[in-house]
Amino acid sequence: MFTGIIQSKSIKSKITKKNFGAEISVFVDKGFTKGLKKGDSVAVNGVCLTVCSFSKDNIKFEIIHESLKLTNLVKNLLIPLNLERSLKIGDEIGGHLVSGHVHGMGKVKEFKKGKEKVLTISKPSAVKDYIFQKGYVAVNGISLTVSNSTKTHFSVSLIPETIERTNLSSIKKGDLINIEADQQTIAIVETVKNIKK
Image (cartoon, rainbow, N blue to C red; front, side, top):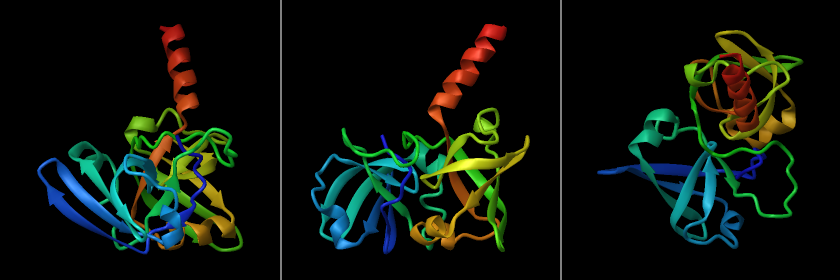
């Protein structure tokens, strides 16, 4: 599990195709790997990946075809990747509980960077019923609150700190963004649907 509070951004990354999918090599700040172990989980752009090997400034992960299909990991490699180590018992939950199981990708429709910075993203069909105003959503692994929602898209308002600390500073209109709906919201909505049947 993760909190959606980004701890670091990749310096660069490299993808290598494999029979099972791909291997991604992520170059990181040296302090990020302190205490890391093989087999640990790291959220990479919101995708929970298992550490296969690492050095002081590099981590390698293996990605299956399903993850490649549902996420932007090989589509946005020129943009730094958001990184978060897994949650430990006793850690502060600054955002909301994020599983790292991305439901799909949304396309950036608009990014207003005026006095108020508002990012508008299309809704993946898999989560259209679970994203609504004031609810939680993870965007490229970032825990955010939905400021507006329609049938086809949703918006989040961003503070400068979030933009500076994450890869949202590098995105533009048309980019694909990893979306994970809040798991508690999904459970509640699905329960209500079943009751109404």
